[in-house]
Length: 321
Image (cartoon, rainbow, N blue to C red):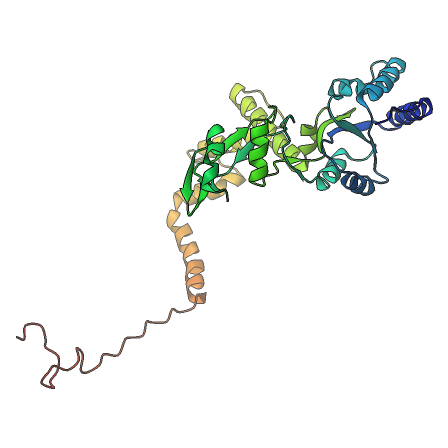
């Protein structure tokens, strides 16, 4: 490509500096093998919500360095070490999870190319490959167990071909291409940077997750408070319940003392049969309301059970010989 002219560089400096000043959130995205059509679709989907900025890493680093020099301690310093490889920026002031979803909605499967760094583990599944038996050596070089079934090579067990962070070799890329496996995705958010979100993992935290973690923390606080005998707001309801049970336990054993809430317990212990009789009518009513099950119909037995014998008489009974 032709190098940028001085005017173009000046324009780019101004554009990126304005974005760094205007937006307080940014995604650093990998754009390996991304076509112009896909990039245009992504830009269109995010119009009015975010802006995509691409450029040479050296140029972007220079603009960022000048910006950080003018704004020391700015949180955009976190993305400086991420500016390597084929990456771009997505600037926004919008909700980060929603922008992340827009980026992922426009990603497409990408083939594994030799020399590329795998962003995730790649596993070759077991099953037929469609390759003829003459290509067995190709699979043996990659130490993939195979067998011949119905005139084609079949992989017997799934194989972890590439690990995340490893470089894709020519043989691995050729195998994945032969099997028509596109394991990677174009345009994948790698880093989110803002005043509140240090990484993309934070974007997966939703209300349900926060509610679950809050309830778990309350349970732990209540358990610790009860164990050490130190009352807290989390353990208050449990302490009141335990105190009430203790009072009832003492009251039911006292003949000359009681209180209103303990009366039902004392009455039950004094005459359990009364509670059983009170529950009986309810059970009877429920039984009456239930539909009466129909009796199974008795099967009609043919008079000539067993059929006729060879002389025209009835079937032989047990013991008739």
